[in-house]
Amino acid sequence: MQSNLTSNSRYYQVITGYITDLELYDSYQNFIQARTLANRPDFNVSSIGHLDKVFNENSYMKAILARREDNSPIPNIEQYFCFKLGDKVIEGVFCRAFFNIGDYVEVVVDQIEGESYFAYALRRPVDHYLWLHPYATMGTELAKRKKKKYLSLIPIIIFSSFGITGAFFFVYMLILAYSYKNVALLFGAAVGLLFFLPVHFYYSSFKQLESGSPVADKIFATLGYVNPKNFAIERECDFFIDKFNFLYEQYKANYSGSLTDEEELYEEFTDYYRSQQSDNDTEDEILLKRFLSDEPPGKKWVYIYRTATVIPSYITVIHTEDNNDKVES
Picture (cartoon, rainbow, N blue to C red):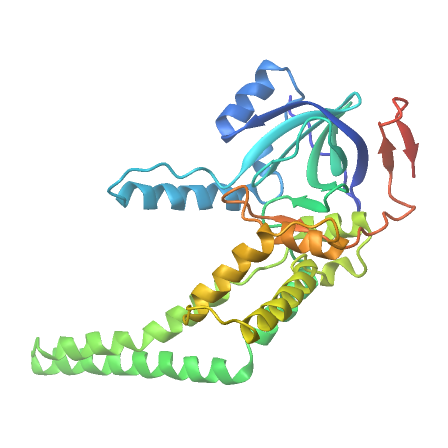
């Protein structure tokens, strides 16, 4: 019998403590097999959060791999995990789960059954890392506003005109070809179809815009972000990007080396800056160098936050680090 995740509220729960019994799985099949062998509570993992998008992305990547000549493997974009906080069993999926046994963490969870929970976010205070469930990065209201802005009146009029013109020209040339029994006129009809290309590209771009995530709404609300439905985690990056660009402009103004290409100079400064370590580094400088790190390869949906939000008092928080499962709510 399958269990369902129990939370139907606006919030998840939070469990804090030190990681033990960490297991990582590089594929969905290995994760499901391990769950079965461990006799963990059964539930429909594939229906959780945005795993449908993850599966589609992996299928797309495998299709690309099939066309590559070198047949080099492409790892899945997600990594499954299971660990314990106290006697609580925490399962979940992030892009790259590079936390470790012994780490103190704050995990946003939903209860599966008994002492088993599913993780949607994990915050590691010691180095300000925040892992998020795949694609759970933007609130739903913010995404709606961005899409409305994209669908402004002027581009709609322009691309609608392309579509109407193409349809009229296509039908007109087909009628002429049929009336005059002239096959050559069908090439004119084919030209009419070209008018649909800009419409297709515009519509494809619109579909690729983030639609927002109800999972993100609940994660941000649970962690205490203000106005969570209008929040995007990329805002955490703005401070680091602005600070780094300011430092780069200073470096470029005083540069006297041989490089003339802007991209090469930017890469040189990036490598130089993140490799510099000093006991005098401020916390912001330490976080910026961590932000610039490209390890581990392929990581997504992992962010550096500057200041931790305060978990609201109405959120259920289970503290396992004291070995007595102290509960706050």
